[in-house]
Length: 507
Image 1 (cartoon, rainbow, N blue to C red):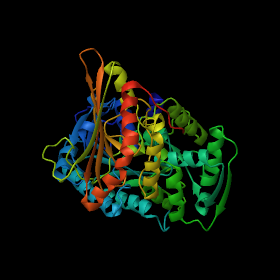
Image 2: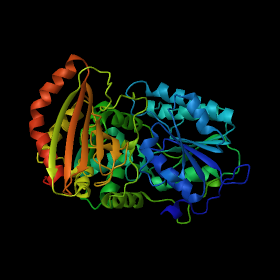
Image 3: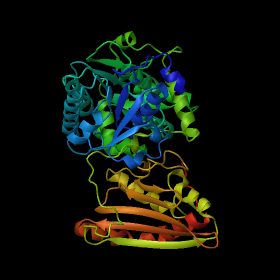
Image 4: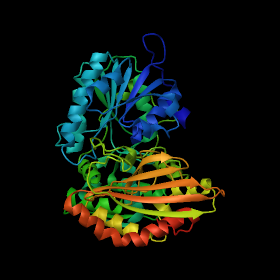
């Protein structure tokens, strides 16, 4: 597949005749992580700009790229990132930010464009969203369009690629489509399911992104990119069911279901949080169909043609089945999130710190125990009390949190910084330490930590630690309210990790 993606594309060179140096922002995101791989495969030199460099260590391309650590709001860090760069990929967005994400995206784009101009960057490539001309756009699509305008006005020639629904394992749009179609055979749906959409396979998006670097003409414009077919969302669900081998789906659109109501429904049925679901669904009221095919004048189609929708679905489902999902929408860390002290910090500045510590010793070697630690969550469940975690996940979904439905990218292997149910992998040191940080809605900060230590007789000592830093009086009340549940979930969980007893959670 990797050779197919960039087959026949030219290689851009720097002024000294070397392969161009490409900067990739958003490398922990769904598209960015895959783009780095494709750029390297095609022969480019790659620099990555990331908020947390340590979260990239588990990516297979980590040792092959240069990394600059910093935040998109930090002008000095951005200046360092773009220094000497030939082509800069702008893949930043703030869709998961609850408040004023539009202004945040404008500020980021303006600062990035100014830094790129000052550094003499030859080209910016930006992946935006397809938008109807003269139509009232959703805040999400409007922000994408404004970001493109800001970058094109920066003085750096900018190629903006506007895509619609991206079909690929791990994309938010695909997971929303997948879960809706698979879980509900008979649906009463909002009228937006009749809006026309031109989906595009993620492999074709990557081809356009890589190909844009090698375009010889100096361009400062946007292009619509789409797959070879146009469907309504309803037709897309029916096509998905056929590609996945499901029975025929019956879909009845009703005008009374508003985007706000339907996003709540989508948030409960799919892994996509309500905040993100609302913004994605709000965008579905706009038709996303490419108006022209001028992109083909600069980036030709692959020899076999663009990927059909059913082929894209088949490839995505194969990757999911084989546990080969490389990147996911949920793996990108939340922009603008505060950098809180670790729970191991002896000078933690938050007052009370509640802990629940359990230990268990087993004759199993540390490698065997670590496999159980790293496979926790997702469809593997947590312990014999997995029902209690499911209940907590449902409560979180009802108040707009992420819940348990995000699951795992891979059933047995974790990456530092990736999402795991309602946790984020904060620290990973195989085979000794796994620390998860809670992303559920609660009045405080919470972590769940596992440590494995070898014993003198070749066995393993497991220390399981739950940490909670309450925020205000409500935080203290919360801890003592859930404390009785700890006696149910934590003993069985540490025994499962140490000795391997568990009950899997059903899909």
